[in-house]
Length: 531
Image 1 (cartoon, rainbow, N blue to C red):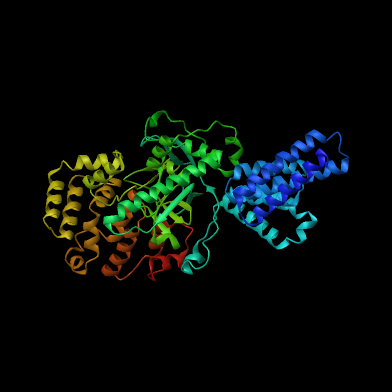
Image 2: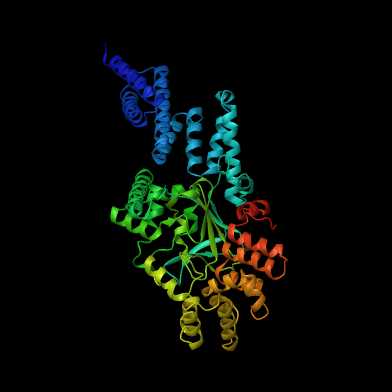
C-alpha cells in the first residue's frame, strides 16, 4: 500500500468515526475527530495538489468542506458559536453555496440574534435543489428571521395572548431591541442610559437576552443562604463559560463597571450592543481575570424578583439572578422612571412614566415608597449612597419639627388618616409644591395607602385630605407607575365615589407592565375586571 493510499484510508476511518460521534450527539468527541480529519485533509491537499488529478483534488476539497460544516454543527451544539462561524466561513470559501453549511451558519446567526444575516443564509440555501427535501423547516427559519428582524427594528412586541392564556405553551419569541436611548456620563454614578427623545409611559426602551441566568427554589431561612451560595457559584460558572466561548461576550462584559473609578470609565457607543456589531469586537484583545469577573457580577447582576420588576411565565415561582449587559448601565434613583419584565432569559425594560429627551433612565434598586431613613439603610446594603434630588429635599424637610412629630406619631400608632392630614397641612404651610409634594407622599405611602383603603377613614377624613386620584398622579410623576398605586387608585375611587376613571387606570397599568400588555391581558394580570 502506497503512502497516499494509507493516508486515504486513515482519512476514511477518521471521517466514519467523527460522523458516528456526531450522530450519537457526542459533540466534544466529534469535534476532536473532525479536527484530526480536517488537518489530515488539509495536509493531503497541500502535499499532493500537484500530483493529484483534478477529480481527486475536487473530491478532497468537498471532503474538507463537509468536515468543516460538521465540525461547525458540533461546535454550535456546545454554543461555541464564534469557532463554529469560523468553520462555516472556511467551508463556504471552498463551496459558497454548500447547502448544509448555509443552513448551519443561518442557525448560528439566528442564535446570535443577527437576524438579517441569518435571513440571507436561508435565502441562499433555498436556491439549492436540496431545499426541496427541507422546504418546511427552511421556510420556518425564513419566517422566524423576518419576524424577529421586524421586532428588533420596531419594538412591536405583544405578550397579550400568552398572558390571557395563563402562560400555556411556549413563551413568546423575543428579539434583541434597542430603542431611543444612548449611554452617557451620569451625575448619579459613572455611566447611565439616557432617552434621546420624549418617551410615553409604557414604551419599551430595550429588550435583551441574558449572558447567563441561574434559578432555583430557595428553601427555609436556615438553609436558604447556602442555597443562594450554590446558585451564585453556578451562575459564575455559566458566565465564565460564556466568556471563554465567545470573544464578543468577553468584550461586552468588559465594558461594565467593577465598582471603582467610575468617573474615568469609557462611555461605549450604544451601537456596540446591537447584535450586528459582532464583527467589531472580534479582533479586540479581550481579557478578564476571575477577580474582575467576580467584581463585575457583584456590581451588575440583577435579581429577577425585584421591586421594579415582574417575572412572567413559568419562572415566576423561582428565585433568579442574571446578567443583562445593557440593562446593567441603568442606575438607581429614588425617583425612578423605568420598570422591567422578565420573560424567559430576556429582560424587557420600559418607562413607567412619561420621560423627556435627555432624561436618565433609572430603576428603583429597592422599595422607594419608604421614608428617607429606611431607603438609606437599603442603599447601604447595596453598597452605595443615593444623593438624588428627592433624597436631598427630604433631608432638608426632616429637620422640620412638624415632620419629626408626624414620624414620632406614626411610630406610636397615630391614626393613618390623621397623619396624612397633618402632612398635607405641613406641606401647605411650608409651600411645598410640584414634585416635592410627590416626594413626601411617596415617603409616607403606607399612611396614604391605609387611609384610602378604609371606608371608616374616608368617612371621617375624606373631605379633609386630597382625592386619591390626585395623590396617585403626583406619586406616578416622581416614582413612576407601581402596582400598589394602581390597586389603591381602584379601591380608593370605588370607596369614595363608586366610579373609576378607566383611562387613568389603563395608563397606570401600562406604566406597570408596558405597552406590550394590552387591556384584556392587563385584566388577567391584575385579576380584576375594571377595564
